[in-house]
Image 1 (cartoon, helix red, strand yellow):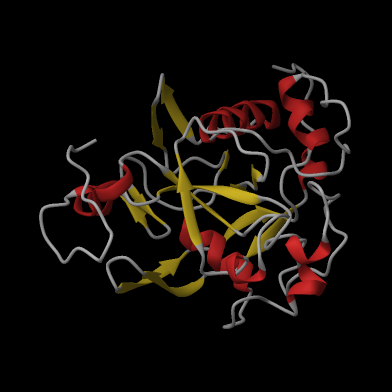
Image 2 (cartoon, one colour):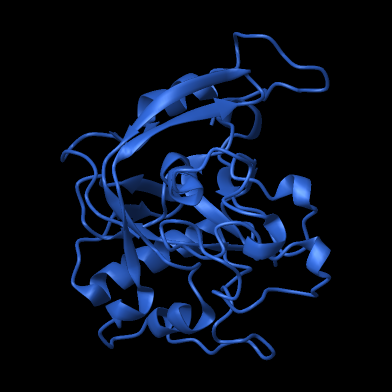
Amino acid sequence: MSTSPLDFAALDFVPVPAGRITMRDARTDSSRDVALREFSIVRTPVTWSQYISVTGESIPAGEPADAPVHSVSWFQAVAWCNAASELAGLAPAYQIDGNEVSWRVDAAGIRLPTEAEWEWACRAGTGGPGYGPLEAIAWTATDDVSGVQPVGRKQPNDFGLFDMLGNVWEWCWDYADPARYADYRGFRGGGWADKPWSVRASVRRGSMPDAALDDLGFRVAKGAVGEAGTAAAQGWSEVLDQERADSRGGATPFGWTRLQHRR
């Protein structure tokens, strides 16, 4: 890891106001209201230049320095967050013990957003599938590009955030669907190779936390959003995770297979 102070201005955090958002789960056909505290999130996905300023690695050949980092696992992303926090002089947000990661919700450090934070930040007060015409705000399959594109080239949303949709999917803190996929983590936003129907503010996907995909990167948030010793904040809670992991009850949609073991 780099030992140089992190250029915090380069991350360009934008304040996101407090508010409420309705989170929907298509599989369970349910919804819940989430109250969010004010937090900050970076203006663009983490770029290669920002990523290597923390890791001390080299940018892979052919990758633009100002394009989103990708092919980074969820585990790598949370480790980067802690390292970046330390370089910035902030209390790390995560306690990491091998593959066990817990979130200190009272820490001011750099972290992945929850899905509720991500969607609230993406929508920026709008209610449709995107925050503007897709061709104006997002890199998708309709642009016929062959990989990630430099950040900030399309129009931002009303919070001043770029590339919330398209370019790369972005890892979030939350489990995707623990009853069906165990420890898969969720990601949002759509990528450069996705059809428009998949690049919407409400679309959720997930993968193994050690997966590294060429259209999957991450964006970071920061700010204490809970009290010390609690395991709940910004639409996430350990209790909710446990309830969602219980696959014994509820209707099973056509083609859906229950997980045979608890994580």
